[in-house]
Amino acid sequence: MADRAEVVVVGAGLAGLACARRLASCDVPVTVLEAADRVGGRVRTEIVDGFRCDRGFQLLNPAYPEVRRVLDLRALRLRPLPAGVVVATDGRRSLLADPRRTPPARVPQAIAGGLSTVRSPGEVVAFVRWVLDDVRARPADLLATPDEPWGQALDRMGITGELRHEVLEPFLAGVIGERDGSTSRRFVDLIVRSLVRGRPSVPWEGLQAVPDQLASALPAGTVRTGVRVTAVAPGRVTTPDAELAVRAVVVATDPATAGDLLGIAVPATRGLTTFWHVAQEAPTRSAELHVDGDGRGPVVNSVVLSASAPGYSPDGRALIATTILGAADDGGTEAAVRAHLRYVYGADTSRWQLLRIHALPRALTAMPPPLDVRRPVALGEGLFVAGDHRDSASSQGALVSGRRAADAVLGFLGLPVPPRPPLDVVHVLPPPSPMKAPDAG
Image 1: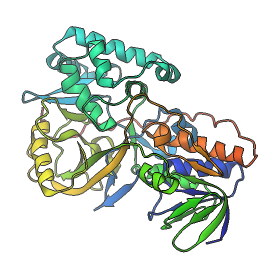
Image 2 (image 1 turned 120 degrees about the horizontal axis):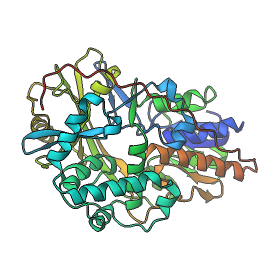
Image 3 (image 1 turned 30 degrees about the horizontal axis):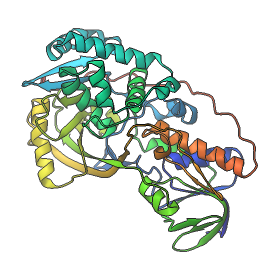
Image 4 (image 1 turned 120 degrees about the vertical axis):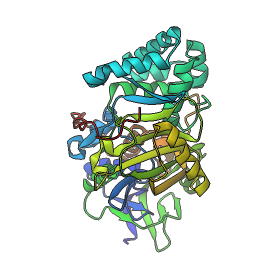
């Protein structure tokens, strides 16, 4: 490894790769050092017996502006999940879906599911008003509203019945990592807006395709994996084997590592665990996310991911991704999850094969109020930081923070900052035909 570098980026997750890519596009020599054996950070995909298991159930929303600016969405061959959720309550499973984006043949089922699950017309009116307000608003307007815990906001809006407790809370728990209503109302507003305006998807070849695409746009030799950075200081980056003299360094790691290297405050994080099971036959014909409105066990959500993304399964068997709150990979938890899934799907789960468990104690950066999506990225003396903890806990936040850090580096080096790239056209493949499987409700 050379003992000098213009700019070093520590970490090859989305933020670090986006930062390096912008610097390289401005002809700034940049080196990315990644401790793992592959790029991606928290956005990784394991191949297990031919099945694609993302490191934690994750979706990419192609409606995010920064996603459209920096990614070739057509090349990712995005597979959208249906715009709906199946709720298990009182021993039955009901589909609640956006009728505008539901196949005509399933609209009556969605309407019937809504009528059977939601019994408070006033709560429905309040919910629709909330969603429409979020969808019509600009992100800047949502960020300018007074902030509070989102649970208190729902109380104030009158969203306090079955729709909230049986649908919204379990549905959003997998996105924000909590069910206690403590997350910033502004952040939840942004999530609701993006979910309604976009089509959350997975790439055909797994989420790993996203960081791989970002890395492929960099000059050969830019990214060096298997290199752990032990210390950074103004003008210096230290690894176990060398000390590099640099003009600027960007730490684009997880919050805890960034705190250790830079001495900055470490935000709270939330843990999630994803269980990957394989079933000979799918437990349901529904490709929607499944939740338990009765809260009878640890499962936050579950989905037959291969129903929407056939590329995740090598042989046509069903790949099921199930998420719980917290980090737990012990056998007792898996047994509890399997038992709970029997109720969620109304199907026998005893013969399912456990493929992989991803227990992630720092899966998400907590977003408490008041939400600040423009935390400083320039720390002085040529030190910079990037990551979703500087913006918002999403792929949008990670990519934006990478661009912001790169622009700050350009300014530090006395170079012009180019305009933001134009938005790409969103390319999403149509959903596959409904799966042939026993009807579990």
